[in-house]
Amino acid sequence: METIAGAWQRHKNRHAKEQGGFVELFIAKRLIHGAAAALMGIFLPIFLFQETGQQFYIVGLYFALLSLLYVLFLVPGMYAANRVGFSHALILSGVAGVGQYVILYLMSADNIFNLLPLLAVFIVLFRIFHWVPYHVDFTLFTHTGERGRVVSLSFATISFMGVVGPILAGYIIDQSGYNTLFGIVLVLLIAATISYAFVPETPTHFSWEYLQTWRNLFAKKNIAVTIGEFAAGAEVVVSLIVWPIFLYTLLDGNVLEVGALSTVIVGLTIVIQLALGKYLDKEKGSSEKTLGWGSKLNAVGWVARIFVLSATHVFFVGLFHNVVRMFTRTPFQAILYDMSAEQGKYVDEFTVLREMANHSGRALSLLTIAVLSLYVPIAWTFVIAALASLAMNMVYHIAR
Image (cartoon, rainbow, N blue to C red; front, side, top):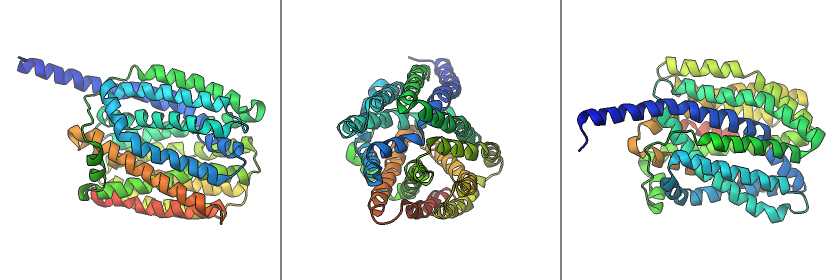
């Protein structure tokens, strides 16, 4: 029988392990994997847009299908993650990520429609084994009172990668083509996969049944979080998929100019991001208040993007919108990580609900935008992102 002293020592060892786990997770995810994401972030949807004959509705429907498949298969995926451990599941996600870019390396306009189904398999597997384990580990490796600063540090790291990534990727594509870029990303993803092996395992186990998870998704106690995450997904997917393609068409397919503009805009926002995180941790209730007015300014930013007509407009509107989006994204994530930590042993189940709601929002948003793009310019679909930004305040109301 375990003694009290032994139990206490085991608790201290686990706590120390979790404390140190953030460093390993940060290096693997935000530095190595983040570098790969920064190179491909805005160019993956552009690549698919080019190879499918510049038909946006095809790209929109494809990414909507990916999110829908992720929502449907996430719970069975968690049963598989239980067997290997959540932190070790990150290694499987790395393998799936490598497979994704092998397919992209082999893809061309001639075979794209044959390879898109296989690409979908790797993308969905990556999401299943990556995002819930990552968010759960992040929650367990950080603590209340510091999450605003840590979330802000994570976003600032993404932003820093975003300074170098887009212009470097644009230059590589312009000089050597997409295959060279895919090769570089493959090397980074292999390194990230190896790095995930050093992330400590966490004491988590997904215990809900499939239908039970869906019932909890729409339960009254979770409805505000469900709506908030649904709205967040609907908003972010416009930024990740629609905006890069809009930018590419606006700049007449000049990928180097697309990368350069993205680099300049992102580079001017890093200091503000770090300062915001410190403020959110220092000022009690600041996350909720900042999200309240930040979401309104974010909506204004999306409406302003509708009227972008030149590279100069892209710069000024993009800079304004990047800054105001911080005042939505940072407190939103900080609030939800704090709420996740409050779930105790159900942190993984709560994270699954968040992911299902978020990608349901992405799927519906992209389906709507794909249909609308057949009748109106895609710029007008930014209204959907503006409305979604306002709806994210549901999380603010539950946090009050």
